[in-house]
Length: 355
Image (cartoon, rainbow, N blue to C red; front, side, top):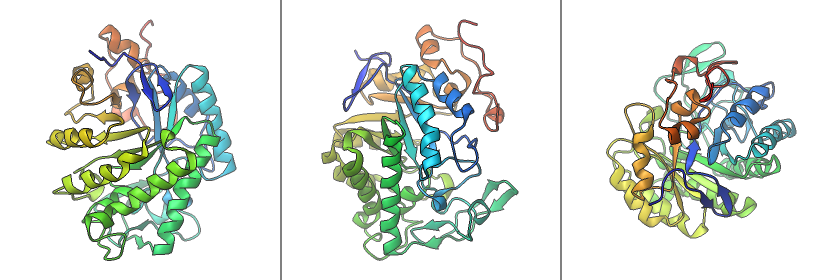
């Protein structure tokens, strides 16, 4: 029986185990959206994971949705991430960059030169976003034109090429959690009647074109996609997600992607299993649970539901998580109130297993 501690071949990239660090926004980037010394420490500390997936990295200036998030569109940003990847590789780890365009999630105060958030359709998200000047209501985004959509696809491609140049082992395209790719997939945020919306095939087009273009640029074996069918986060409404996601995975299956990352929601295990049958490559799963993903969720690997499992909060509190999982604990308790801001716990403040 395969366990989480067994190695796995990720389209030619050898992983030492099937435990992955989930991508999580850190809001700790330096000037100009660069990775910092703290970034190097954070990922290097967790290099014993089979795979590290970074926080969301914006592919363009207008793709930023939160304060102090990093980018991969400037030479300075590329150079800063090279320090991270070099350190992780020296520690024996493997790391993918998550490329995330926030779309309508954000606010003009986060953007320079009078820019406003963009989206498939001019539909504002409910709620507020935190900014450097306090919480702000989400604004109505500007609808992307056909030409601008094609430029945005190119932005993903350029950022992905920059990621490889920065030493990343591959990229994960963020198609989940209500950000731009997800906004094109969801019927309540994509109201378009042109070729980029309307039917299921229209709504999946942006996702498929981004993935195909990135795979053509850096290789399918270094390209992955994250999805979260039915996830209501950031005002998304997908009451019947099965058709769209089945069509999306069917379209992408022939490419031979590095992996498909499914962020499960409550009551969608049946869809996960259906997508597993459609997708013959490596399936990564972030299991739905009421609390932090823990050892009890290893059954998704034991039962063959997925090939790799991602951990979020528990990995923040336990940088040496693979060793703790193998030993059966003990586990430092996650404290989400400390996970943001420079020097917060989840970097160096938690005791190691042998402390």
